[in-house]
Image (cartoon, rainbow, N blue to C red; front, side, top):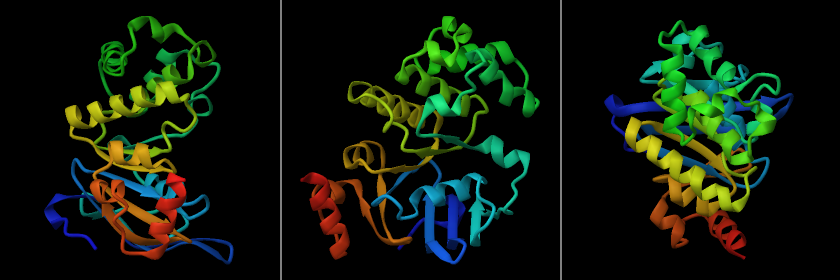
Length: 250
């Protein structure tokens, strides 16, 4: 399924299986992402794609199989260096930002935690990188629009200078008019910083805009992988994939 050379692997799962009680929600998933690649997981609600993302992020410690980062197997409870290199952007930026902290405080927190220097300069630099002026550092989340909040959430993920972003439906909580701006920002950041993206979404247009390869999930299993071009043209091997694509376009 995957032809990524070992030396170029950023993220890899081997036979990843996750159960909640007696119910398996992810079963035997094998993924390999190259450095600098943008990969998407798509499928119906409850198919296990967000569960995979949470396990990769170190938010779900109960899984079977193997998770590797830069060819090193990761333990269920990750160390600090991992969290500096792998950051997550959540679906709802309002829920992921502390409502009583100004933007500068939310951005400074990971810098303090990881012992990084130049706090004020780094905050200014990352705000400008995501298209916000220095004035935004003194605002609370409720004083921001949905798009601005998501830009701050992306800034907080980027401020540690990671190599991987895990994106959990990063535009689904936003107005349609703002979605394209955030997608273009994410695309630009990946190119400028040589980031590896793993994104989960229900939206085919979002997926083909940002991702080079797409994995189709169904009932906890990875059915097949397609290129963005194959997805656009509805070229698929599995019957479920063809049905899913047809239903998405209806």
